[in-house]
Image (cartoon, rainbow, N blue to C red; front, side, top):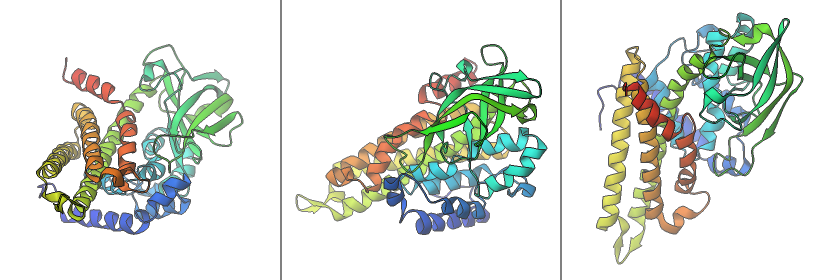
Length: 380
């Protein structure tokens, strides 16, 4: 299907990302998944491609412009590798870059941002807590003023890249309860009192490290506060918009991979004297899968177009986020049915896609939170 939003520049960009993924990621994705990590060299190669530079000024190694379509292209093509832990491992820094550029002190930006953007260092956003999840208003980690410092106490969990990152953007309570009273802080890995432990035996995202972080009287200079005191919640919410767009595109890429493998298998596999693809029940499954993919892709492109016009379509991003994860759930399940036992074997792209579905339905705002946010944005 052709889209009116496609340009020569975007097509060329897609081809460069697709070629990179096919050459540098897909042949090794299963191996990295089983090993539980990706080589740091991959971060640096992708940094050289500029994929971490959207919305980041050129002086910090960024592209000097943002493009929702290109953000989506990167995430979609990465999603096609099928092994979701790989894009998670290299993309974790993405949700911390914008807050660092917009809100960190100039000294911090000048010292660390270029290394993060160019893939030499890692960074993580730290909001989720053991007792909180999507309910940011219940955030319990505290930051108490002590002269020219703040002292941070508490913990964070499910932090993507947490075991490898050098820098952390940490949400902590500086004021009263509720949505107000939350501030953001820049914390470095070697700060006394900061420790971390890996989350192990996960259902998916094996190649990506997630961690629980502990802050025991972690002292940071007052200048490490990012943005206005007690108003960090607004920045957190704004930061979710690009994250949700990338998850939508990520789902799209995984769906396309699952459909591609389903068609390939159905053409090769013979049952009852003819190829699987010739059985009507299989053909109908493929039609349903393809329709879901077309719907997500069309919806995503319209959202990207609106974002390019300077709008922030929060309701549409929320709806598309849960719509795409539900569509991925359907497509992954149908692909498993088509491949049968072959799809159940480790190393099969469809097997990995099937077990990666749930993390995308939860991360970046659960399906339940997305539905509620969408309805509130509709004024109801």
